[in-house]
Image 1 (cartoon, rainbow over the protein chains, first blue to last red):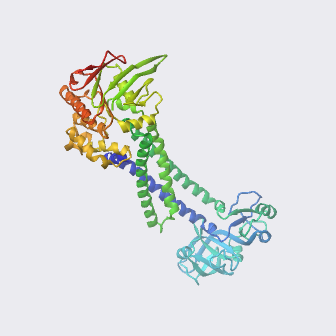
Image 2 (cartoon, helix red, strand yellow):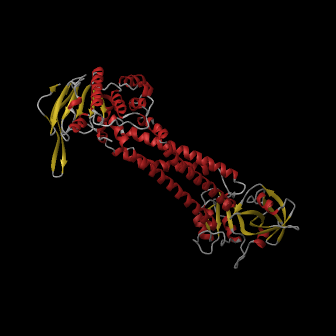
Image 3 (tube, rainbow over the protein chains, first blue to last red):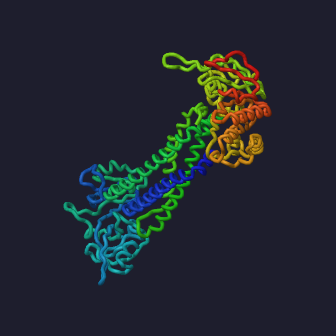
Length: 362
Length: 229
C-alpha cells in the first residue's frame, strides 16, 4: 500500500469524488434495505410471528397457490389435520381485513385485520379472547383511541376491549385485532358455499408429518409460516419491487466502482510499467491496487451505511423501518464485496502491463 | 561484479519474416566501470538494454553477473522481475518518477518492494540524494523539481540497494550538452563509488568524456572492438 496510500493523498479530489458516489449509493441501499424490512414487517409480521410452523390453506382446487383472500377451511379439515401423525397442534385461524370503529362522539374508524381464534388459544398474545371480547395491539389502540375496558365495533359487531398488547402484529399494513372464532364468523367469514370455520389451520408439527399425503387427503395446501408470506398478494409485489431496486443499485455501484478503477488503472499504466521494471511483482501491484479500492469502499460504505442507519432510526416513528445488523451490515458487506469484484475486474489489466513500456520516453 | 553479455541475439517476428534487433552481441562491463553503448537511432541499443535488464527474453545467448548466468532465453518473467529488484538498477530515458511520491519516497519505494520498512533505507536514500546534490529537495514531489533534478532523483533511485549492475537508457536525451555531460559524469562517479558495472546507452558521443569505454552498435551488432575513451 506504499504507493496506493500516497496516490490517495495525491489525487484526493478524484478519490473524494468516487468515495462520495459510493457513500450515496450505500445510503440509498441501506435505507431501502431498512425500509424493505419495515414494509415486510408491516405486511406479514402477524403471519411470520405466529407460534406455529405451518399453515394449511383451503384453496378452491388442489395445487392452487396459497392465497389468504380466497382460502377457507372447514371444521372437517381442521379436525382431520389435528389427527395427522406428527402434528402436535392444529388450530383454526380466521383472517379478515375489516374496519374497527371506536365509540363515542369522536369515534374513529381504522382498517384492521381481525384474527379469529379459539378462546384461550396461544395464537393471540396472552390467549384468545372469549365471545364479545377483542384484544388489540398498541398500534390499533392508539389509532382508535381506546383502552382496556373500552368498546369497539368491529365490522359492526360491538365488542369489549379486554387487553391492549405490546405485540406489533400487522398484516397488509393494518394492525391486528384478535376476536373469538364465533365473532369472527360474523366479522370475516364471507363467501358462499359451505360456511367456513376459518381461513387457515395453524399447525405445530412435532415430527416428520407427511404433509403432502395429508394435503391430498384433506384437500388443503400446506406451507411454512415463512413461505406463507407469498399468500399476502401485496407483500410479493411490494417486496419484489424494493428488492429489485436494491439489486440494481448494488449492480450500478459495482459498475461505477469498476468504471472508476478502469479509468484510474489506464491512467497509471505508465507508473505500473515503471514499477514492474523496477522489480515490483504483479502480485504486489494487484494487492496495492485492490487495497486502495478496499480502503475507499470500506470507508465510504461504512459512513453511508451509518448515516442510513441513523436516518432510519430517527424516522422509525413515521416510516416502517427496521434497523438491524441484517438490514445494515448485510447490504454494506454486499456493496463492498461487489465493489471489489468490479475493482478487481478493472485492475486485472495490471497483469497485462509490459514493463518494457517503461523504456519509452513520456 | 562484472556484467557479461554473451552472444546475445534478439529476433522479432516481422510479418512473414523476422527482424534481428540484437545480433550476437558479446560484451563485458567490469565492476565499477561505465561502458557507453553508442549508435544511431534504430541500432538496437535500447533492445540490448532491455535484454540485459530482463525486460525482454533473448532469443539466444545469456547474461551473466560475474560467473553466474542470470538471464537466458528460458528465464521466467517472475525470476527476471526478482533479479531487477535485487541486483539491477535502471535509469530510464525520461525520469519516470511516480507523481505522488516525494524524492525521498521514490528511493524508499525500493525497500518496500523488497518487503522491508521504507525507513530501513532512509539513511542510504538520503546519502544518495546528497550524492546527486538533492538532499535539500528530499521532500519535494516531481512536479516541483526541474527536469535535471528529476533525472538525478531517478539516478539515485536506481542505486538504492547497491545493485551489481546499473543500466542507463539515454539519460541525456532531454538535457542540454552541459547538463548532459554532468549527468554522465555523475553516473560514472557513482558507479565507481558503488562498484556497479554500468552500461549506458547514448546517441550523443560528446557527453561521454567521463566513461571508461565505448562500444558502437550498428544494425544490432557491435562494430569493431571496444574502444577506451
